[in-house]
Amino acid sequence: MNPYTLLRPTMFALDAETAHHLTLNGLNVANKLGLMSLAASRPAADPRTVMGLTFPNPVGLAAGLDKNGEVIDALAALGFGFVEIGTITPLPQPGNPKPRLFRIPEAQGIVNRMGFNNEGVDALIENVKRANFKGVLGINIGKNAVTPIEKAAVDYLICLRKVYAHAGYVTVNISSPNTKNLRQLQGGDELDALLAQLKAEQEKLAQQHGRYVPVAVKIAPDLDADQIKNIAALLMRHHIDGVIATNTTLSREGVENMKHGDETGGLSGAPVRDKSTAVIRQLAAELQGALPIIGVGGILNGADAVEKIQAGAALVQIYSGLIYRGPALVAECAEAIRSMR
Image (cartoon, rainbow, N blue to C red):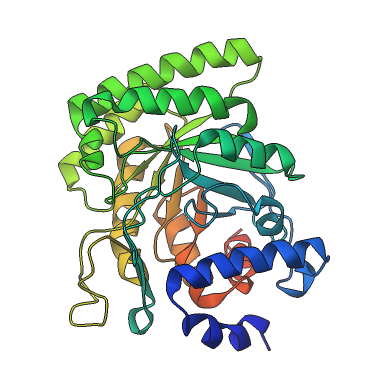
């Protein structure tokens, strides 16, 4: 029997954020005791080269689970082909008031309004330095809540400069629904200006460090066809290295009248699956292979992962599925994708 099946009822009896912290602490302890092999079997090798990086398998951890990079080694031991930490901001911030994380088990969904709670970019870098992980590490960057939206680029540039030497790739998060006005940055003029500054800084940093670190942009599922077309055009114009589709949704389709279904925040898990896949499919049509897509949103089993690849994603990420299915989901998704070949 999957050990997580036994553990889940106990964890689900706790407040979601309390369970989250207990899980991270438990993973750290298990890793130090050499017990991570009991949690899940490692996927077979299935290397993919994406954004100029070689991933040992195409299944990664999405940002949000390990915001401060505190359990990188333990998470990597679950068999992920890559691990993305963050979202991180220049200054520490507490995030939104609690409670701010809610499970919707009957829909296999999660609502969060965490608000980029994190210990700040400097603390994350110290955690990364302590980790032994040698695989592909993504670092997801955002802006502080107190920074006016018109000054957002300043925060992204601060984070990019600080994390550059420590990241396998950097994700620019402009799609969280829990930081006021952040999604405005997906608009034409705002996105054009932001990408121009990020690309110029990336080129400077590549020369300075003698190493090119890819930059990806994470977008929302709540975009119409014209918005997706415009975003794709800007990503290509500025030679951005990748796009992550998608973040959480503001829609409540599929969770109407369920407990916590009307909580403010972003909805993830199974209810966002189809919206995410639709965005990936249109992005792939617009991009025509100009840059790779990392598919995330509602992957609860191997078939969901395959669907994202078939829609046009080169890699996938999971988060909410890990909460509902446990670590076995990593190998299941990796094997399902490998079997496509």
